[in-house]
Image 1 (tube, rainbow, N blue to C red):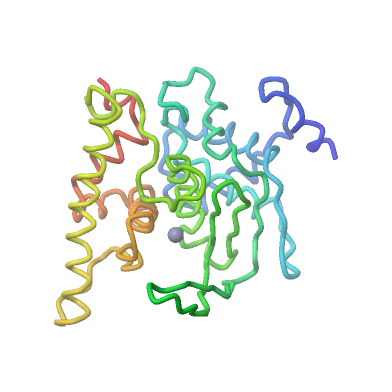
Image 2 (image 1 turned 90 degrees about the vertical axis):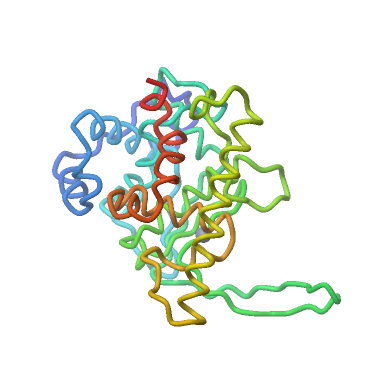
Length: 276
Ligand SMILES: [Zn+2]
């Protein structure tokens, strides 16, 4: 109830419920990529989580009872990508809480106990309507709530879905996300937004094509399967989301296969470190 009122206040005036120490420490311990952060980063992450938990409404679906530990595990992974970012308009932010604007288009987070089977419908070029089922570990909709399967929260679905949300900020209403989020000013030394976008698209396209080729070689000709989850080969938006999981969770291994993307993502997620 208190949090509901807090949500009506501007962030700077809110006094969100602090995250208890023991809970914070156990959350860090449960996620090696969070315990690996330095103490400044962990402090910033904790601050973001505290406000995130006030701003978002968590719902357990199908009988799932959400504990504070579960909500914090989700919050911490959702806020991890924000740590060193610039704001949504591309500028460096003085107040780290401004970074939560990246997720400002929605409030609800629905957590399902397991994967969800969604009934889908598409119309093909001949006008024939096809119905099919899709098994979802999570789902992000532009300007809509986010769905996560708790079973999959341990396997990076949180980072995946929240990165989709960032991607969606780069599209107009009604468009599909395309793996090209809005970029920070001066992105990797580029001199303007269109040059930045071009660099992003060229680098992504090259990496995506090479990855699809590697997946196809494995499927058709028995070549070694790529290390990265082949769901990334689905389309550019999924390629962005899956490679971001790897970037945040296992940077060293990711860098072996995708050195160009490490540099590109550093420019997006850590623009200040890159400007120097
Ligand atoms: Zn996805």
